[in-house]
Each structure stands twice: as C-alpha cells, then as structure tokens.
Image 1: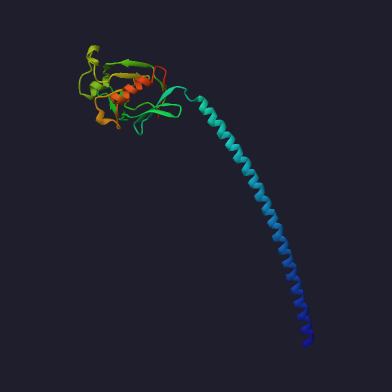
Image 2: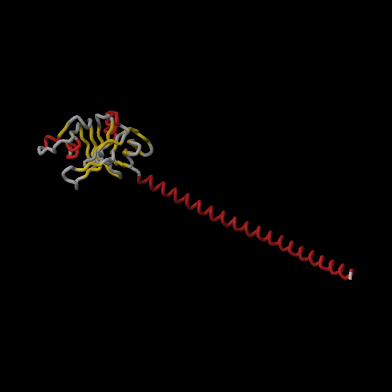
Amino acid sequence: MTRTIGRSTRGAASAVVLVVTALAAGLVVYQFGGSHEVESRILAAGSRHAVSLARLRAQHAALKQHLASQAPTGAYIVVDTARNRLYVKRRDAVLLNAVVSTGSGTMLDHPDQPERRWVFDTPRGAFAVQSKLINPAWVKPDWAFLEEGRMIPANAAERVETGILGEYAFGFGNGYFIHGTLYTRLLGRNVTHGCIRLNDDDLRTVNQLADIGTPLIIF
C-alpha cells in the first residue's frame, strides 16, 4: 500500500506539474498577447489624438483669421464697466488707457407714478459714436429733478445747465454719452446714471482719436 501511495503521489505530482506548466505557458502567452493588444490600442488612440489636435489647431487658426478680418481697421473704443476703464485701440495697439466712471446700477421710482422707474446702468453691447458735441449743455431729465427733491419744470429752458459735461460729449444712442465731469475724484467708481465720465485730458484725447462712426464696445 505504501508503494501504491507513492506511485499515486508521484503521478499526482506529475499531473500538477503539467497543469502548472500549462497554465504558466498559457499565462505567458496571454500576457504577451495582451501586451500587443494594449500597445495597439495605445497607438490607435495616439493617432486619433494627433488627428484631433491637428484639426483643432486648424480650426483655431481659421477662427483667429476670421476674427482678425472682422476687427475694425481704424480706431475703436472699448469700455470695461467692471473695472471702469476706457481704451481707445487700433488693432492690437492701445492708444489710450483711461480711468472712467460708469453706471451705478441703482434704481429710482417716480413718487407719483409707480409705473415709472429708472435704472442707472451703462448699456452693454456694440455701439458707434453717433454725435460729437463741443461745449455741450445738459438738458436735465425728469429723474434729475426728482433726485434733488424738486418739481419737474414745465418750462424746457429750466432744464438746461452748462459747464457740467466738459468740453466734449460723444453720443452713442438713447441719451447716453461719453463726456467730461466735475467730479474727477469719483473716477474709477460706478456712480453715474449710465453715461461714461472722463477727465478733461482723456476727453481731449478721445476727441482727437474718435469720430462719428467710431465703433464702441461696452461690456
């Protein structure tokens, strides 16, 4: 019985060795086969990535060229209402970098007419200089009298005030202007009723660089 057990043990051991060898051989083949498959997938993914990157670069170049073709060829004005800055630019060159005051964003309700409300924001969007005025007079709107606690005058002449808006005013629609100010200490703040205020020197520079039709971008 001892010998029988020995033979069975040796036979079982041989079988185990064969199985382990076979498994090992299969595992090695699987590993090498898997490595080739992974490598192929990586190469394929890299090729697709390279194609996608090249396509994106081509699209970016085409978009950049299109935007460049749409840019104004002459001077244009950009106003950043968050930072209260005004720029006059020509292509990529900055011709003027000025501190301004823009709209406060506050509201005023008419005390006797609840349906009338004024929001003192500087409008955002693309505009153009529509008018250039020299030594402009301010025709005070209704809200200016209400803010001062005064009655709104029936006589239009009582609305006119001079020496308030500086030497020049550049209208860009709906009663909004780029103009001078007496309150230069407030430049850099959002304090206006929607117009864009400049100091005298910067206003003169804008007058030299801008004309009727000059593009104006406000954001």
